[in-house]
Length: 215
Image 1 (spheres, helix red, strand yellow):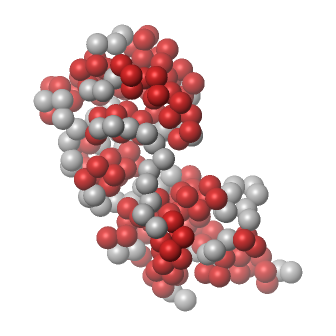
Image 2 (cartoon, rainbow, N blue to C red):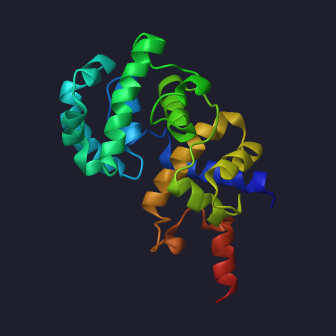
């Protein structure tokens, strides 16, 4: 089975299981999603949603973020991990949005990655969830781990993984692929305690093939 055939089968199985995937982060507009994704670095989506439940009562626009001092932002996001650096980025980010984009979140990869706290992963999430634009593939810890286990890539480098997956997967499937693997990583292919015998994609997973041959 080629990598393309394996990837196609994985998508078919997970699409049947999860139907239309939805991001786990809570938000009401483009800017709030940008903030939530920045906060999600090295932090669980569940924790981010707890933080933003209070933060988004006062922050709905970049102007609202600029009205807060960095210390006030830090107080809201303290449980996010690396909160001082994230608060600094959110403050600078809000200034950049005013100066460069009239307080609108841009919808181009090259513009998004110039904003403080925004890398390719964050930009891909924004583009995919808000505008349905596929410029690349979101590679988080689940996507990295599962893509290796399934046998689609053989590297831990997120940039190389993204490039390799973009060669294997049709562009129309880039957005869903990441969502499906994140959901499967939380449901069955759990780090340190994977439920391989129950996993729907075990039949096309190289890790499972190797593990059964050893028995």
